[in-house]
Length: 50
Image (cartoon, rainbow, N blue to C red; front, side, top):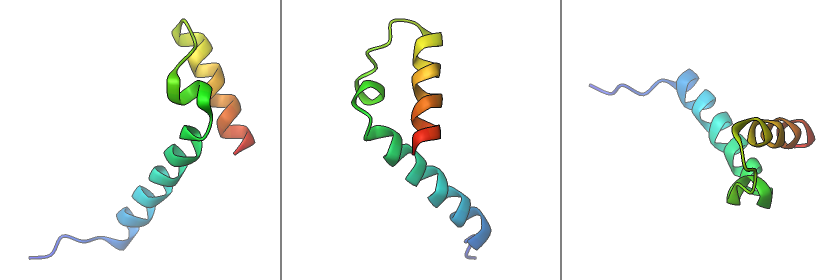
């Protein structure tokens, strides 16, 4: 039985593309932020810019 769902695959693809765009930002990929709040702020800014 094939459990492929086009709807779930489309959503998974969107999430993977989002993480790929976030990895383009060096600060997020290397996690230069010292604490969780700084890291979350950097992720939010990168998500808005992307």
